[in-house]
Image (tube, rainbow, N blue to C red; front, top):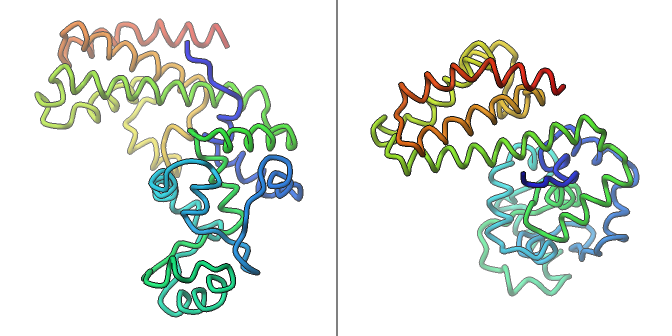
Length: 262
């Protein structure tokens, strides 16, 4: 089994991230882990500077921000309009000797200190980000036993889901089902575990973000087991009707096992 580190609590849980960002001690991380050079009195960085700080490609930062755009924008990340950009170039960039590097830029994403810290809590493949998460967890002591268990199941569930997606493609099932294989298999499993489709469950529970971020550890564990079983069936050459029957047969066994294990 893949070992999942405790710092995944911050990667997986926005509630945990918001708790850290509400702490008065959060800025200590820039002194204790790694200092960051902020631009002028605005105390911001640009995407290039953020990538350099976390020692990852610029494209990695851009993808991370795009995938979590709402969260970043709520935290103060800004894309300057024409008027704002002109003022920023003429003051902050000139002051920091960066004017020549960006004088032809038509827009700039400006990242405040909160968004810098948020990036560290979300960025998986960065040693700097991991060190920051470890420090924050130790400072805030937010990593309870239940949070760790939930984060482990969430991370392992993502791994199983990727494996299922690959199996659907490799087996030809996705082509046979005209591109609807993943949604068909997923909803079949959701109906067993949740008693209804994902769409209906989200509507009933007023869920706006990713459904699995709102499921409990036991639900995630059963879904993970059923998706793993579906992958095995596909690897053996079975198609949907046969795989579905096998999943239905084993569902109760998995559910009882998870409930007994607590």
